[in-house]
Image (cartoon, rainbow, N blue to C red; front, side):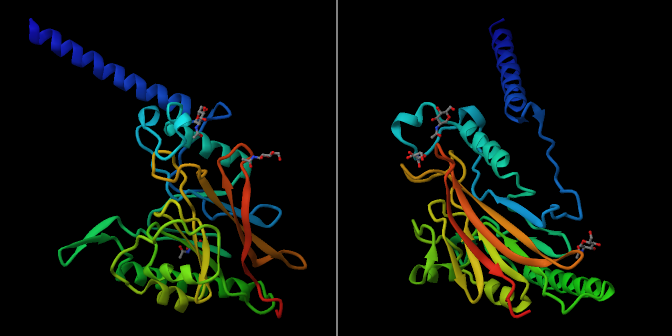
Length: 309
Ligand SMILES: *[C@@H]1O[C@H](CO)[C@@H](O)[C@H](O)[C@H]1NC(C)=O
Ligand SMILES: *[C@@H]1O[C@H](CO)[C@@H](O)[C@H](O)[C@H]1NC(C)=O
Ligand SMILES: *[C@@H]1O[C@H](CO)[C@@H](O)[C@H](O)[C@H]1NC(C)=O
């Protein structure tokens, strides 16, 4: 009889748990009371807007835990009791409503292409062991081979398109890359000019697999967006390619007390031809803080088509 009661208790707790999850999903995944449809793949091909722009929201370190039950890290003591993952979902919702991005970039390995702007997503792994020593993951040779061939294929397609529509000299196609863990060269940026905050050491792998060399050789990647170190949010330039941190986004991930959680926005603008939109003319970025004004900071132009054309 005793064990029967325990069984029912467990059963009840289990039901309550399922109900809590359903309730959470129902109340939190609604945007303007319309459910968010989560699509694994965006509509392809990606399209620029009628004004010739394409906007990406980078969510570098979302760190979603278990919803209402997750404690926030590194917030003011007075905020601690009223803070959970719901603050993270609210920030995401606010950012989507305010910036209306065409694409939200979380990390993973795949390709999204719009024929003028290509987005490469590379999975930099998590932790690995090299000769008995634990270190962070890195981008593998096989991924770099994939990147080289995808980039070449896209640039050939781009040339063909330009040839068919007989436009003036071809603009090299522009691409952006996204991955989670910074590459070792990002450390050097501390000694150079950078825009934003260098708040902590760069935590990267002890293995340098030649990502920078590959990116320089394929030529189309103008900027790389990384995460992992939540209190770094700067952009710095390595051999002509920008490396930008997104900054800490989620409240359950670590941060620094008094430092607002933040997100990076990336805007690509097309060049206006006589009758049609041409290739990408400019790539801009800025950040938004999760403060009372959703302050916009550190706006900068990352890349611009050289005016000599
Ligand atoms: C890029 O997109 C175009 C149009 O959607 C498609 O035809 C092409 O196969 C894609 N290229 C690659 C390399 O995925
Ligand atoms: C989290 O959200 C609650 C409820 O909206 C709010 O009172 C609190 O100030 C937020 N905390 C932070 C750190 O944004
Ligand atoms: C928000 O804007 C108001 C009015 O400009 C200003 O007084 C306030 O200091 C700003 N708050 C933050 C956190 O920047």
